[in-house]
Length: 228
Ligand code: ADP
Ligand code: MG
Image (cartoon, rainbow, N blue to C red; front, side, top):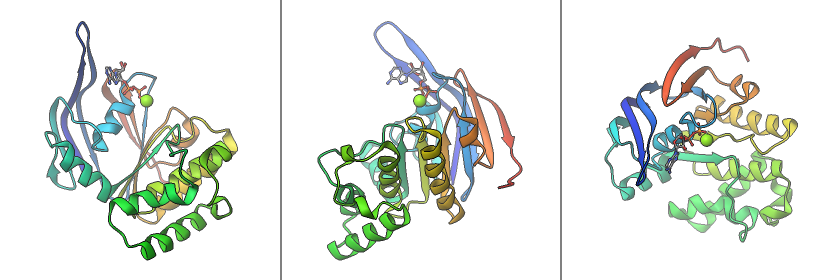
Protein backbone atom coordinates (compact mmCIF):
# COMPACT_ATOMS: atom_id res chain seq x y z
CA UNK A 1 0.00 0.00 0.00
CA UNK A 2 2.82 2.34 0.99
CA UNK A 3 6.50 2.26 0.22
CA UNK A 4 9.26 4.81 0.73
CA UNK A 5 12.81 4.82 -0.57
CA UNK A 6 15.36 7.05 1.13
CA UNK A 7 12.63 9.49 2.05
CA UNK A 8 14.23 12.66 3.38
CA UNK A 9 12.77 15.92 4.65
CA UNK A 10 14.80 19.03 5.29
CA UNK A 11 13.20 22.20 6.65
CA UNK A 12 15.15 25.30 5.66
CA UNK A 13 14.71 28.75 7.10
CA UNK A 14 17.05 31.72 6.62
CA UNK A 15 19.63 30.57 9.13
CA UNK A 16 18.87 27.01 10.09
CA UNK A 17 18.48 23.76 8.30
CA UNK A 18 16.69 20.93 10.11
CA UNK A 19 16.98 17.41 8.81
CA UNK A 20 13.62 16.14 10.06
CA UNK A 21 13.78 12.79 8.24
CA UNK A 22 16.78 11.06 6.75
CA UNK A 23 16.67 8.11 4.34
CA UNK A 24 13.49 6.47 5.58
CA UNK A 25 12.87 3.09 3.95
CA UNK A 26 9.51 1.74 4.87
CA UNK A 27 6.90 -0.59 3.48
CA UNK A 28 3.39 -0.95 4.87
CA UNK A 29 0.96 -3.54 3.55
CA UNK A 30 -2.77 -3.25 3.19
CA UNK A 31 -4.55 -4.16 6.43
CA UNK A 32 -1.59 -3.53 8.73
CA UNK A 33 -1.76 -1.62 12.02
CA UNK A 34 1.54 0.18 12.50
CA UNK A 35 2.66 2.42 15.37
CA UNK A 36 5.37 5.04 14.95
CA UNK A 37 7.12 5.91 18.20
CA UNK A 38 10.04 8.03 19.33
CA UNK A 39 10.93 11.08 21.41
CA UNK A 40 9.51 14.53 20.78
CA UNK A 41 11.05 16.18 17.73
CA UNK A 42 12.32 12.96 16.13
CA UNK A 43 10.21 13.40 12.98
CA UNK A 44 7.05 11.39 13.69
CA UNK A 45 4.56 14.04 12.58
CA UNK A 46 6.70 15.00 9.61
CA UNK A 47 6.68 11.37 8.48
CA UNK A 48 2.95 10.97 9.02
CA UNK A 49 2.23 14.19 7.13
CA UNK A 50 4.27 13.03 4.16
CA UNK A 51 2.72 9.55 4.22
CA UNK A 52 -0.68 11.29 4.36
CA UNK A 53 0.18 13.49 1.39
CA UNK A 54 -0.14 16.68 3.42
CA UNK A 55 3.47 17.48 2.58
CA UNK A 56 6.11 16.47 0.04
CA UNK A 57 9.52 15.03 0.91
CA UNK A 58 12.67 16.96 -0.02
CA UNK A 59 14.27 13.86 -1.48
CA UNK A 60 13.62 10.17 -2.01
CA UNK A 61 10.67 8.28 -3.38
CA UNK A 62 7.19 7.70 -2.08
CA UNK A 63 4.87 5.14 -3.63
CA UNK A 64 1.25 5.48 -2.57
CA UNK A 65 -1.00 2.70 -3.88
CA UNK A 66 1.72 1.95 -6.41
CA UNK A 67 1.93 5.51 -7.71
CA UNK A 68 5.09 7.61 -7.24
CA UNK A 69 3.89 10.78 -5.53
CA UNK A 70 7.03 12.37 -4.04
CA UNK A 71 6.96 15.37 -6.35
CA UNK A 72 3.22 15.59 -6.86
CA UNK A 73 1.24 18.81 -6.97
CA UNK A 74 -1.02 19.91 -4.12
CA UNK A 75 -3.99 19.31 -6.39
CA UNK A 76 -3.02 15.71 -7.10
CA UNK A 77 -2.26 15.04 -3.42
CA UNK A 78 -5.58 16.57 -2.37
CA UNK A 79 -7.43 14.22 -4.69
CA UNK A 80 -5.59 11.17 -3.36
CA UNK A 81 -6.18 12.29 0.23
CA UNK A 82 -9.89 12.83 -0.19
CA UNK A 83 -10.42 9.49 -1.86
CA UNK A 84 -8.18 7.33 0.28
CA UNK A 85 -7.17 8.77 3.64
CA UNK A 86 -8.85 9.64 6.93
CA UNK A 87 -6.92 11.74 9.46
CA UNK A 88 -7.22 11.94 13.23
CA UNK A 89 -5.24 14.56 15.14
CA UNK A 90 -4.38 15.14 18.79
CA UNK A 91 -6.41 18.36 18.90
CA UNK A 92 -9.47 16.83 17.20
CA UNK A 93 -9.43 19.61 14.55
CA UNK A 94 -13.21 19.86 14.31
CA UNK A 95 -14.87 22.98 12.93
CA UNK A 96 -16.38 24.74 15.94
CA UNK A 97 -19.08 26.53 13.92
CA UNK A 98 -20.51 23.29 12.53
CA UNK A 99 -22.57 20.71 14.40
CA UNK A 100 -21.38 17.16 14.96
CA UNK A 101 -23.40 15.93 11.97
CA UNK A 102 -22.14 18.72 9.73
CA UNK A 103 -18.51 18.06 10.68
CA UNK A 104 -18.88 14.38 9.87
CA UNK A 105 -20.66 15.15 6.61
CA UNK A 106 -17.85 17.32 5.19
CA UNK A 107 -15.73 14.59 3.52
CA UNK A 108 -18.87 13.35 1.75
CA UNK A 109 -19.62 16.82 0.42
CA UNK A 110 -16.07 17.04 -0.97
CA UNK A 111 -16.64 13.70 -2.69
CA UNK A 112 -19.98 14.82 -4.20
CA UNK A 113 -22.20 12.30 -2.43
CA UNK A 114 -25.92 13.06 -2.78
CA UNK A 115 -27.79 14.57 0.18
CA UNK A 116 -29.60 11.31 0.73
CA UNK A 117 -26.41 9.25 0.75
CA UNK A 118 -24.77 11.77 3.07
CA UNK A 119 -27.57 11.57 5.59
CA UNK A 120 -27.50 7.78 5.63
CA UNK A 121 -23.70 7.55 5.91
CA UNK A 122 -23.51 10.16 8.67
CA UNK A 123 -26.20 8.41 10.69
CA UNK A 124 -24.51 5.06 10.29
CA UNK A 125 -21.09 6.26 11.38
CA UNK A 126 -22.41 8.36 14.30
CA UNK A 127 -24.13 5.21 15.51
CA UNK A 128 -20.94 3.21 15.10
CA UNK A 129 -19.02 5.81 17.16
CA UNK A 130 -21.80 5.94 19.75
CA UNK A 131 -22.26 9.69 19.45
CA UNK A 132 -25.70 9.89 17.81
CA UNK A 133 -27.19 11.56 20.89
CA UNK A 134 -24.84 14.52 20.33
CA UNK A 135 -25.40 14.98 16.60
CA UNK A 136 -26.92 18.46 16.88
CA UNK A 137 -24.34 19.72 19.38
CA UNK A 138 -21.34 21.86 18.54
CA UNK A 139 -17.83 20.54 19.23
CA UNK A 140 -17.16 22.89 22.16
CA UNK A 141 -20.26 21.53 23.92
CA UNK A 142 -18.66 18.07 24.02
CA UNK A 143 -16.01 16.44 26.20
CA UNK A 144 -12.60 15.71 24.68
CA UNK A 145 -13.43 12.02 24.38
CA UNK A 146 -16.66 12.81 22.56
CA UNK A 147 -14.92 15.28 20.24
CA UNK A 148 -12.36 12.67 19.32
CA UNK A 149 -15.12 10.15 18.59
CA UNK A 150 -16.64 12.72 16.23
CA UNK A 151 -13.22 13.18 14.62
CA UNK A 152 -12.92 9.40 14.17
CA UNK A 153 -16.40 9.40 12.61
CA UNK A 154 -15.34 12.14 10.21
CA UNK A 155 -12.14 10.24 9.37
CA UNK A 156 -13.99 7.06 8.42
CA UNK A 157 -17.26 8.29 6.93
CA UNK A 158 -16.01 8.09 3.34
CA UNK A 159 -14.57 4.57 3.83
CA UNK A 160 -10.88 5.45 3.46
CA UNK A 161 -8.37 2.67 2.85
CA UNK A 162 -5.93 4.29 5.23
CA UNK A 163 -6.37 5.91 8.64
CA UNK A 164 -3.55 8.13 9.92
CA UNK A 165 -3.67 9.22 13.53
CA UNK A 166 -1.17 11.64 15.12
CA UNK A 167 -1.21 11.16 18.91
CA UNK A 168 -5.00 10.62 18.92
CA UNK A 169 -5.10 10.03 22.67
CA UNK A 170 -2.66 12.82 23.58
CA UNK A 171 -5.38 15.14 24.93
CA UNK A 172 -7.56 12.46 26.52
CA UNK A 173 -7.60 10.81 29.92
CA UNK A 174 -6.77 7.12 29.88
CA UNK A 175 -10.33 5.76 29.79
CA UNK A 176 -11.36 8.01 26.88
CA UNK A 177 -8.06 7.25 25.19
CA UNK A 178 -8.79 3.56 25.44
CA UNK A 179 -12.27 4.09 24.02
CA UNK A 180 -10.84 5.87 20.99
CA UNK A 181 -8.15 3.22 20.50
CA UNK A 182 -10.79 0.48 20.63
CA UNK A 183 -12.70 2.26 17.86
CA UNK A 184 -9.54 2.55 15.76
CA UNK A 185 -8.80 -1.12 16.38
CA UNK A 186 -12.31 -2.02 15.20
CA UNK A 187 -11.72 -0.14 11.95
CA UNK A 188 -8.48 -2.05 11.41
CA UNK A 189 -10.25 -5.36 12.06
CA UNK A 190 -12.67 -4.41 9.28
CA UNK A 191 -9.73 -4.15 6.89
CA UNK A 192 -8.62 -0.51 7.09
CA UNK A 193 -4.88 0.06 7.20
CA UNK A 194 -3.92 2.12 10.28
CA UNK A 195 -0.78 4.11 11.03
CA UNK A 196 -0.69 5.79 14.40
CA UNK A 197 1.91 8.11 15.92
CA UNK A 198 2.09 7.81 19.66
CA UNK A 199 4.50 8.11 22.52
CA UNK A 200 2.20 6.04 24.65
CA UNK A 201 3.23 2.39 24.96
CA UNK A 202 -0.35 1.41 25.77
CA UNK A 203 -1.59 2.75 22.42
CA UNK A 204 1.29 1.04 20.62
CA UNK A 205 0.12 -2.29 22.06
CA UNK A 206 -2.79 -2.16 19.62
CA UNK A 207 -0.42 -2.32 16.66
CA UNK A 208 1.16 -5.30 14.93
CA UNK A 209 4.42 -3.47 14.28
CA UNK A 210 6.26 -0.64 15.98
CA UNK A 211 8.57 1.60 14.00
CA UNK A 212 10.92 3.57 16.24
CA UNK A 213 12.34 6.84 15.06
CA UNK A 214 15.26 8.72 16.53
CA UNK A 215 16.63 11.93 15.11
CA UNK A 216 14.88 11.45 11.77
CA UNK A 217 15.98 7.87 11.26
CA UNK A 218 14.37 4.49 11.79
CA UNK A 219 16.24 2.71 14.56
CA UNK A 220 14.23 -0.49 14.89
CA UNK A 221 11.22 -2.12 13.39
CA UNK A 222 9.69 -4.66 15.72
CA UNK A 223 7.37 -7.21 14.27
CA UNK A 224 5.01 -7.82 17.13
CA UNK A 225 3.12 -10.99 17.81
CA UNK A 226 -0.51 -10.09 17.15
CA UNK A 227 -2.03 -11.31 20.36
CA UNK A 228 -5.06 -9.20 21.04
P1 ADP B 1 7.63 14.86 16.34
O1 ADP B 1 6.28 14.77 15.74
O2 ADP B 1 8.36 13.55 16.40
O3 ADP B 1 7.62 15.51 17.68
P2 ADP B 1 8.17 16.66 14.12
O4 ADP B 1 8.03 15.76 12.96
O5 ADP B 1 7.07 17.57 14.42
O6 ADP B 1 8.55 15.79 15.41
O7 ADP B 1 9.48 17.55 13.93
C1 ADP B 1 10.75 17.01 13.53
C2 ADP B 1 11.77 18.11 13.43
O8 ADP B 1 11.46 18.97 12.35
C3 ADP B 1 11.83 19.00 14.67
O9 ADP B 1 13.17 19.40 14.86
C4 ADP B 1 10.96 20.17 14.27
O10 ADP B 1 11.35 21.33 14.97
C5 ADP B 1 11.24 20.30 12.79
N1 ADP B 1 10.08 20.84 12.05
C6 ADP B 1 8.86 20.26 11.92
N2 ADP B 1 8.04 21.00 11.14
C7 ADP B 1 8.77 22.07 10.76
C8 ADP B 1 8.50 23.21 9.93
N3 ADP B 1 7.31 23.38 9.33
N4 ADP B 1 9.49 24.12 9.76
C9 ADP B 1 10.70 23.95 10.33
N5 ADP B 1 11.03 22.92 11.12
C10 ADP B 1 10.08 21.97 11.33
MG1 MG C 1 4.40 15.34 16.49
